[in-house]
Amino acid sequence: MFGPLLGSLGEVLQPQYLLPLAIGTLAGLVGGALPGVTITMTIIIVLPFTFGMDPLAGLAAMVGVYVGGESGGLVTASLLGIPGTPSAVATTFDGFPMARRGEPGRAVWLGTWASFIGGLLGAIFLVGATMPLARFALRFGPWEYFALFIFALSMVAGLTEHSLLKGFLSGAIGLIITVIGSDPIMSVPRFTFGSEFLRSGFQFLPVLIGIFAFAQIMTDLEKLAAGGPQARIEAPNLAVSHVAVIWEILKRPFLLLWSTIIGVWIGVLPAIGGSAANVMAYDQAKKFSKHPEKFGTGIPEGIIASEASNNANVAGSLVTIMAFGIPGDAVTAVMLGAMIIHGIQPGPLFMIQEPRVAYGIFAAYLLAHPVMMVLQWLLARVYLKIVQVPKSMLVPVILVLCVIGAYALNNTMENVYALLLFGVLGYLLVKFGFPLAPLILGVILGDQIEINLVRALMTDGDPWLFLTRPIAGVLLGLSALSVVLALWQHRRQYRRAAPAPAPDTDF
Image (cartoon, helix red, strand yellow):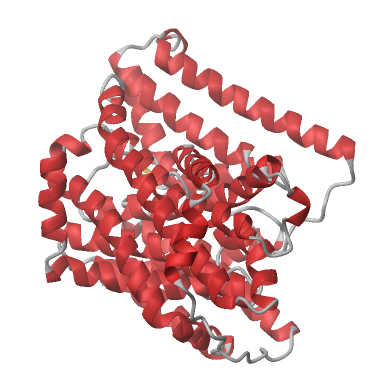
């Protein structure tokens, strides 16, 4: 294991791989720092530019976006009190108060170094656990894969916070989208209405850009029209003793390790994401603290816990996608689509069939962290200036990049029309309070659910095998349990208090 890893580290250090990794990390840092842009949107914008690259270079760029995005959000969370990404929400609780009382450099660098150390600790799990989990997944037949994808889908709907019904409906819309086009086994056309474009179904990228990016841009434009001009904020002094900051983190080993474990675990579970890891690690740090009343006043424990967990979350998500071929969150859903576009099929055989790419992803993940540190050190003040660019200038640029990305997929205008169609659909869903993540997961998983269901029934027509095969039965049982648990949590929440109003946008 260590021999191939060292070889891949040497390969990714070559300029043709290191440069995309650095550019991706920079894009992630900037995208993560821009409130409202999110890592998902950044990786969607970067994805079309990787089409012409070697698969490893393209995936290195996206790993860089992922790692950089998780760290970029802490800058605006600490200095402006606005989390650049949902993964940096809990960082705001103590980062912003610390910066306001005159320690902006300490707040930013505590978060940056905690991200770096937590991310590298997560790499131990990523490198060590992916192959054993992939070997376990080799026992899977179509019954087990069908049950696994149903389990992933049930967790998405079950973890929808504000409306379970809307979460299910959103996932169902995603599944319906995958039914359009020729069926994946017999190639019989369905719902094509005589259109040649629809015979191959909707491409993943225009659907993704339309649903996420277009809907988010329209929401931002609405807020822009309702609000006043953006306030300009002077760049603060970020000078700090790095040795003192590192010691401040390392002298809390339990906090660091526990937050990392939470981040990795949340990342492994499908469809939860860094925002949950961030808040859960903060909550655990507060519960284990000897002085919980000080949380929220600008103490280092709050920043360390939240930032160590959200970067470790990336490692957990990569384990899930590489070992099982299912996305851990919306960002890895995009990465899964990118791998398929590059002709790579993640899953149990991924490590065996594509060892160069698999170990290259490990190497890119490891190297993205020092690259992130260097870029953060050089450019933290620049991010703040970019954040202050008026959205009236930023939004048209992002919109043009989205259209170019959809067109560049196959050089056809139909993909641009599909982007517009799904953009309108995504915007309407947001306006009516539907979460978008279940829809995207439905689009990602729908084909695989159908393929494995048909393969299982073609192999043996006995439907009871889905329940009597041990792994498939356990996974389907967990799916039902996850839905029941979600129903129970929602009922308990409504009994305890009046439900909170749904947010404007649940991306």
